[in-house]
Length: 372
Image (cartoon, rainbow, N blue to C red; front, side, top):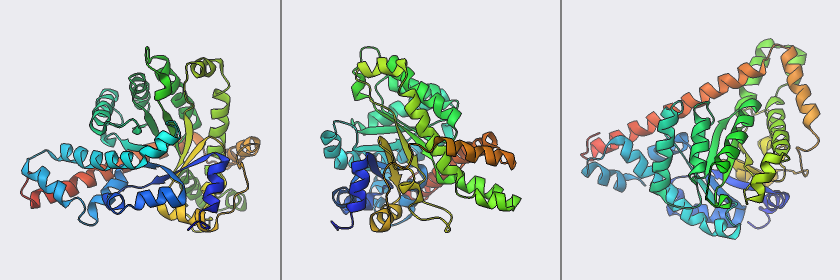
């Protein structure tokens, strides 16, 4: 296993934090997460409604807790919170040594607010507070979608000392607002030690190529074909440029003096969906210092087994990345429309997964004699 992990060690040394984009009670109970930390340099965990829906629908690891919840006649919504926070709390404890060793930089575990409330600021804040209290671990991240309504919730939660993983970011304009929301939250954290408040900004990668390439395929020209697989990398690279630019402002410098941590860019949705692309494309080509790459386990192993790194793959690519979007625009593939569609779909898909999770829990509780 040691030889297999060399590429991942190289990635870590470059300044990329490797996080696992998956969680399940089986993974925790068998010690698999601890093994991935030991052997494959995993330093954090992300979850989402789709991941939990899958975990609940396979195996029997949750049966005992579901039965207990059914006996207590807990509502399905509360049962979902109890089940998901149980796993997240456990994962936080497993990753606590990494959190301590990195002075709170890594060792983080993310749980998302109910995605059905992504367009409701007040409910998002209330849900984030409840999840923060229920898990009760300093290395927790509350995931809040980067919708227009999510932005003030992000600021409010951070001001209260709740660390936030801002999720479902697709557009550069929205990312700019996310960075501002982060800074505003720290500025409003009066009397708090801001060094204890952390955040990452989760930029979704592969979905951008999926949407753009579908549009290019309909155009069907050689010029369109030549642009396939370029949009997602260009988008993420320009996000990193924006991260660098905003980190050089007087506003950030004032926060840095107070001990504030940078809100690291996190590359999410990093498994390639097109078999024509290398399965490690969104790892090797987005490697850069001060970033997080959260990978499904298959991508993690692929990176360990055969990825070829070539150092910092982002710095110096900005003009080339801008040209990609200029060329797409010339073909009629409009950036603003693409990212708007992706945000709407992202919210809808996670809400559908959450409903699937609730339906699974409801069925199991009913079978166990609960309210269903």
